[in-house]
Amino acid sequence: LGPAARVALVCQACEAVEFAHRRGVLHRDLKPGNVLVHGGAGVPRVTVIDFGLAKIATADGTDPHDTDALTTTSPIGDGVASGRAASLADATRAGQVLGTPAYMSPEAASLEPWRIDARSDVFSLAAIAVRLLTSGSPHAARVGESDSAQLARVRTGVIESFVTRLRAAGVPRPRDLDAVLRHGLAKDPAERY
Image (cartoon, rainbow, N blue to C red; front, side, top):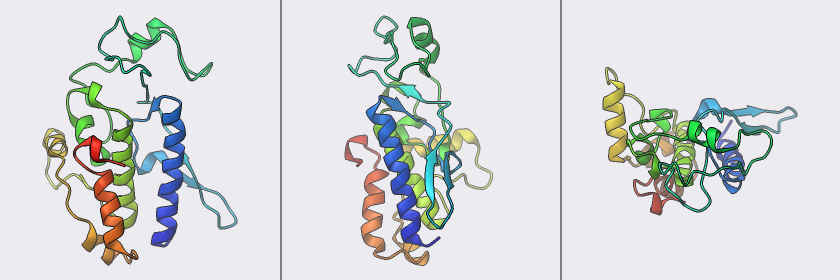
């Protein structure tokens, strides 16, 4: 697939994740392996899979560590466990890092899971776009790098410019796409779109 078709696939993945976000679901482990491309007749379609690390976001902004404030019903419906016991079982505890470091936002790599929100998924979608367009992720593990060293690097939020890699991949208007990717990969979640 050419660069324009790859960007179109990422856009489909963004739409799928937005659908989940509007229903209060954070994926928390978006990566190329969780974005399936299928379909015949030359019309590829995207399906986002593996919501195994997903979390139901609290609509009222309560701290997920406050076990008295955990939601007691599921906004999703019959397919998701509901009730106080399920909420306690699904709560992410401080000190846990969940996800795939190569596609993880700096706040997801932190040991403060309450900082993770929909903008972390936006970061991961931008990282997937980088991978699809340049064959490398923003936080790819370096040769001989330990998992803890990779996570420490991810926490810094330092992202290189992708203009050179996009140009080498034949992406039209690489500077424009670089700007979009850099916003999606911003260290500060408030700067992401």
